[in-house]
Every structure is written in structure tokens, then in C-alpha cells.
Length: 157
Figure 1 (cartoon, rainbow, N blue to C red):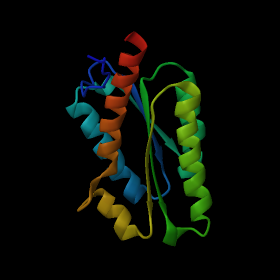
Figure 2 (figure 1 turned 90 degrees about the horizontal axis):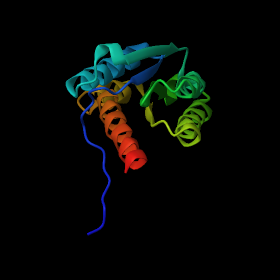
Figure 3 (figure 1 turned 180 degrees about the horizontal axis):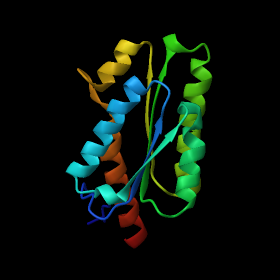
Figure 4 (figure 1 turned 90 degrees about the vertical axis):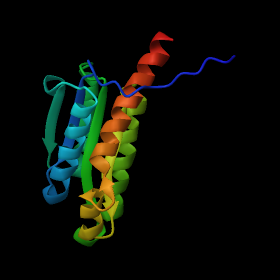
């Protein structure tokens, strides 16, 4: 029988950093609330959650990289909102955030979760930040726990 590795949803003892873009805070604050609520629901202690605010989505990767380099976190969640109607450089900001956040995880081995909304308008963003489409912050937190546990299983397995 092949050995199968997977992560579980037990957040007890995990240390998680949440990096949040201040730009579009009307959207990112509910994403943060969803993430912290989910982390707590799965057993991550408030004392093991660090929240770091950055100016916008463009700055998420550099903050995440510095957090990962400390060795203090089992997972990092990056939250932001890039709304096409709000900026003429949507593609550049969204692409930089996605590439940078992904690269942090690859370079450091610390699960770095992409919780950045990329939407056409504010209505879509609000719907994905706790509205009728759920809360991407909550989804990102669940992914952070499961992926951190998977990495631990790989490293001890």
C-alpha cells in the first residue's frame, strides 16, 4: 500500500502571520476578520497569530518574505484586493502580487497563501469578502493550516 501524506485541520500550536493590504480596507478588513475567525475556529491561539499591515497588494510579497525569513511562522497568509475599476495598472499589481507571493513560498519553504481578490468591481470584491460568495480570507486561513500540516508531514515523514 503506498504511503499517502496529507495535512489536517488541527491548528493547535501553529504560528501564522497574516499580511494585509491597507488599500481597499473596506474589503481587506472583512477578509482579515474571516481569516482570524477561521484560524481561531481550528485551534490557532490568538498569541500565535501576527497581523502585519502593508500599504497595498504590491507590498505583500516583500513583507511575506521578511516574515518567512524569520523562521517564526508555520504559514503566512497574504490578503488584499485589486479591483480593476479602481486602478489603471490592475494587471501589473495583480500579477506582481501573485508572482511574488508564490515565489516566497517556493524560495523559503514556508506555505505562503494567496488570499488576494482580483475582481472587476467593488461589488464582486465585497461579495468575496464575506458577502454572498463567501469569504476568501476564511478559505485562505483553512489552506494555511492544511498546507502547514502537510509540510510538517513531509518533513517528518
